[in-house]
Image (cartoon, rainbow, N blue to C red; front, side, top):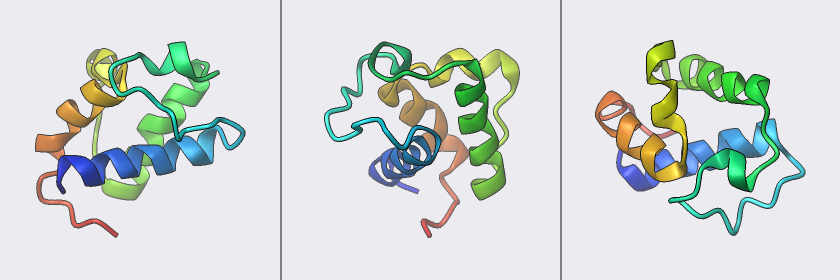
Length: 86
């Protein structure tokens, strides 16, 4: 899966978790928590959705890598390289 597709996947997951948030102006460099009203349970929901939808395991020690869209895409690109976009 290409980085652009991964970004779309994350936007989709965020839309499911925080349906009232405006994701159209999301700044990829700014941490999610500075832009969206996400709590720790919402963050865990992101990790769980990645595992459920794409079988991507994110160990707890790697959670800081999912801080912003840019860091999330960078972290997931090698993990999702063989995943086919649905």
